[in-house]
Length: 463
Image (cartoon, rainbow, N blue to C red; front, side, top):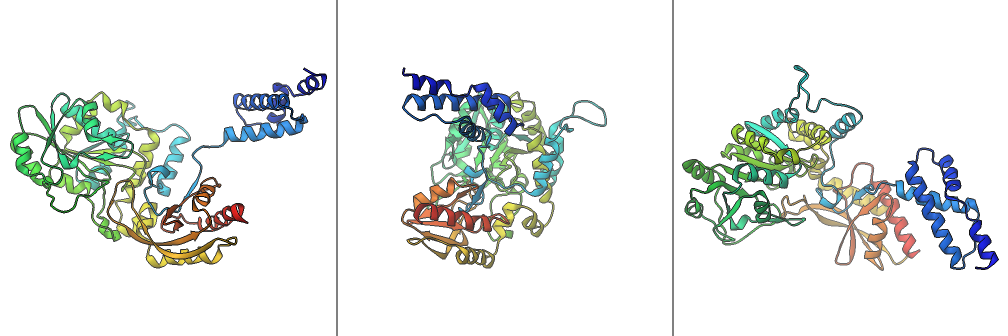
């Protein structure tokens, strides 16, 4: 090793020296994270000098260490402007919580809360108490409990009611949902035995009747949330399944998936099965998602007859799948909005505000974006009609008319990537080589930011 190289290496700041400098600049940084950032930068500088690079002074090295530290402290769940038109976008966290739910989460997150404490007796209470009454009021159910999500709710019910015994399900309802959630796999994990009946497109009541035996524990209906079968099709109404179950003393479980609490026709959409309609049809238990058409936090909501909800609550798996205080607080605040008329819901719930937006409002936003957008040569934009979607398996066959802006550029994929990597990130979609920005899923106040981000991204690529 030459003398110059040795001198350059000896001139590198020690990790503790660099740490001291950064501590003054960022006093609130966790010490262990700060040391690791400094250690990495010193190591990289050593390798660079050994490869022939010129040494940097301590201020330059400190600047690099600060950048490294900032990267380590930055949140990975960055803010996203959703311009895809998909309201319940799973990759983007599904529902945007109502302000009331955000306030509730913030409040209970700051300190202790009476999650599972009976204030009248001073003894341990039950966390379901915060949401059970309102769920029963909204659905007509006798009792309710929660799990971590709808998949967890389904597995919990099957484990509690049907472990080692048969569950009858139509072949046309053996769904697979995103993330490889498959009804047969959930059955297997729960310990239940799947008994398939009927055909993919047609299942009759007699198919269920002929499958019933002394080992039958549950008849299960699964709502095919993310697909639609058309043509020569038939499925058995829930009320008929309940009548059959009552005849043989077998409970019927209805897995609704999205599970709406309101008639979506009030918002100009096709009706989806509601939890109340399933309860009124006589289902013993109904499962639904908290973060889909209810638009709250991720949770699995189990409603139904008190005797069956009690069995579910007592099962050991219930503790493994239970929700915490943040979910409970957010769900309670969200559910309270459904006690009000649809107009109130559209005003105070982001999901229903987006679904209820009028065509003229969306077109006006698209025209404003178009008129203010500044693009480099080689890029052009136009206002266009688009299709929005509810998302997350709800109404998969129904496009909601919307308006947006289409951008033609030398490379739409490169533009989409630049927007994804911006701050905040922008999620768009590409169709027929055109990058499209749908106005329906923009949140209040995001239009100005979107205009700046799109213009900057395009200029950075092609100016």
